[in-house]
Image (cartoon, rainbow, N blue to C red; front, side, top):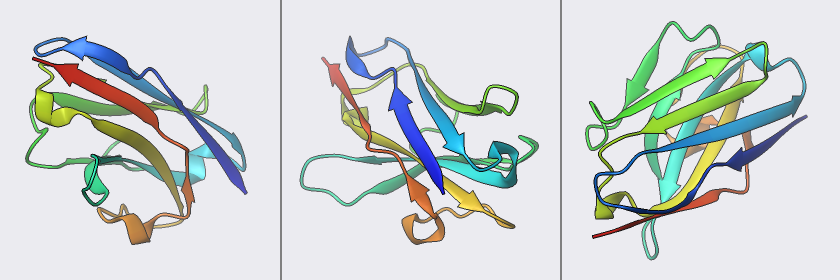
Amino acid sequence: QVQLVESGGGLVQAGDSLRLSCAASGRTFSWYAMGWFRQAPGKEREFVAAISWSGGSTYYADSVKGRFTISRDNAKNTAYLQMNSLKTEDTAVYFCAAKLGRGIPLVTSGYDYWGQGTQVTVSS
């Protein structure tokens, strides 16, 4: 079992930056690929970024490529999402997710554990 807790969300203006954190506890963090997803009101949860257990491979949605950076610190059992040049359309609840074993899923169904989310609101 893995517990995930997101933090770092908030209200910012367009063009600002935020860094989200996802603290993991439970089983060995380095065994898991990690992903970030987001869900805006009235919309389905969508993929944002993912990272391999080692941090050597990363993937991004086209909508955030070049603006967001996913990273992890296995010594701290924490994954991060650095978000720069935020836009109003980035407003959503952001969730981190963990996947045990091989593979780096880009869809929600590929993940085994989820955090409860952190709200990010970007005003114009």
